[in-house]
Image 1 (tube, helix red, strand yellow):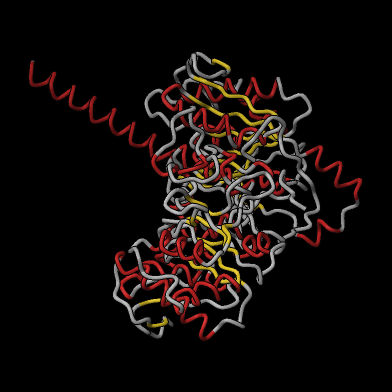
Image 2 (cartoon, rainbow over the protein chains, first blue to last red):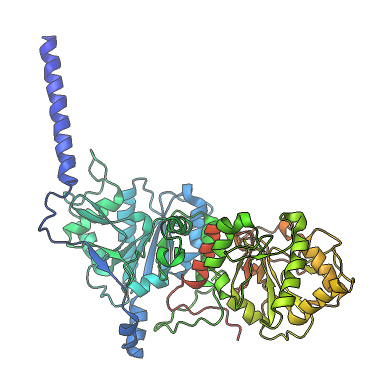
Amino acid sequence: MMSEGSSFMKGMALGGLFCLVMTYFETFNPGIHSEGHLHLHHHLKPLSKEELQKLSEGQMSDLTQQVRVYCLIMVTPKLLVHWATANDTWSKHCDKSVFYTSESSKALEAFDLQEQDEWARMRKAIKHAFENAGDLRWFFLAQPTTFAIIENLKYLVLDKDSSQPFYIGHTEKSGELDYVEYDSGIVLSYEAVRRLIEMFKDEDKCPERGNALWKMPEEKQLATCLKYSGVFAENGEDAQGKGLFNKKSVSSMISDSMGQNPADVVEACCPDMAITFGGMSPSQMQVLMYGVYRLRPYGHDFHDSLTFLPPKDSDND
Amino acid sequence: MTQPQHLESRTQHVRDTWGKRCNIVLYMSSKESDFPTVGLNVSEGRSHLYWKTIRAFQHIHKHHLDDADWFLKADDDTFVVLENLRYGLSEHNTEEPMYFGRRFVPFVAQGYMSGGAGYVLSKEALRRFVKGFADGLCSHNTEIEDIGLGRCMETMKVKTGDSRDVLERQTFHPYPPDYYLLRQLLRPRPWYLLYEHYDPVEGPGCCSDLAISFHYMDAVGMHTLEYYTYHLRPYGYKYRFNPD
């Protein structure tokens, strides 16, 4: 009797394991359909200088108004110094920035989501942002360990219609799923968020507590829900194809470039109009703030087609 | 100012970044080479640095006096923004005896310029420095290069200029940006700000937008500053500081 029981248990265990493995492969299915499959991994670039110059002053003014950004910065008390640094540096350049926290901190103000699960937190933050967007039409979702240059984000999406679905950042592929990497920041148009929030209601396709057996990181959960809504990830790059969204620090990228392109370190490395860098210490972020918004050589004028004014009550930009 | 052991680790990064923005750049070393470096009759090492500096200026006075208006001395780990140096010097007359840099006290009554942050001599200052040694009014009376040069400048009546911008923010920096820029709670002066002639400011007000130099920059730091200064920028941004 005992030996029959243990064989049965072994059979159950093996069968269960087999089911789990098959579920895993269903979601992460490397390249079986890649031949002849529609290449949905798009490359999204900013308008060229020539195209920009064709726009009238009225059109410029309209675009400047339309391209305003709502920043959602997902913080936790564990990242207090990065939180404070993001608050003191780049987030001041968002048209509206809201810090969404897992639990409140006495040191800094934030919207307390009272939620420990990262995906549930992201959903709540996105819903809150959409409801409080006012007339802002672009959303930027980041962690405080990311540094973002919002003016360059605006430059990238300047000619994109926010009533169309856009989901932009540094794209990665996981089997069939193209997703935007969270660490380098996620850009969503108003329409993308609207569709996403509709999809949140579908507990089968877009569950709030995720897949209980196999927990996907929130960047992939997000990509999945968006994909079901017909919104696909696009890679943000400059005219030369250099990625504008980076999860590495500036010094890390420079260091890599010194190894790979010693004759041309800076030119080969990083784009002039970079949007994000990640993995930087709070001190490095403060220096980057100076490097972006202040340090420059006298006499270099760019004659950009748009003007973005410095934020009020700020002394480090 | 460099040495044979630093050509690969430091000096080439100067050459790859800001060195090419000088009208003339001379890499001063104890040995001549195809880098190219000028070979001066000196030994290497900190204790010989003032001798090397004296020999370097004598060399320039002999061979290049009419090739330039201003004469900058920097280290092989100093990052310099040449455009901002030219802008800062534009209102001054090179026939006046003066020199500019990061002004330090005490040791010299009128102050002296930090060696590491780099300093720039007018043509008349260069003439007087070389003449001072030729006439015996200046001598190698210390191993400390910046104090030694500062003493000779004072002897030869070369004035210490004020290199700060119109908002009184510093342009020459003896240390990297993070020593100065980071916000600090009100505190007693840290050791690296003890020699300041002008009251130092910690935090964003420390440093001019049109900074001229930062020192103790390693190779990655050198290229990082090159990227920040000459490449990375916020599209369309209207800078707050517009000195003209």
